[in-house]
Length: 201
Image (cartoon, rainbow, N blue to C red; front, side, top):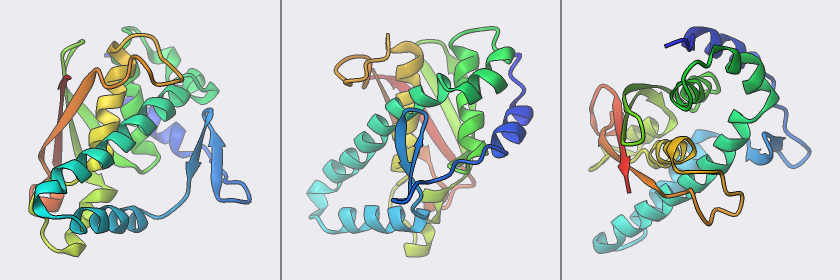
């Protein structure tokens, strides 16, 4: 693999992403907010805890789907950005596999999750391992009963969509939700790392 993960993390960590007067970052063709992880963790937990037990799965799927859609559009903005073309594109030898590895290096560089692909079967399966992610802080709310890294689950599925789901569709009517992600381990439930397994939907 030609992707130099360490170099990508070093270079992309230097990128200054500045918000506008409303705290939004109009980067990569999408708007990204600058709210702390605790805000989103508290928001997710309030949603999950506000419904009867038989509806928890429904709420969790809504959170995962929101991250999936965000990851699809933001991910496309990232891999088509000038920054990506400058830092990552010269390393790419095998598409889309090297693009995926580069995207997860950026995911790490910007503090969303210290994550990397540990297994990849092109077009079929991807396993991502994360040693630090903001949703792992859910431990502060007490031991979670089940893995709860909704953001990473959605992002992992979306990145596989971008790689193998067909042409990017800005309307989100095709190419998205061709893959799904299951979380098999989580720091928030006492494991040493989070593990995310992506397969065809």
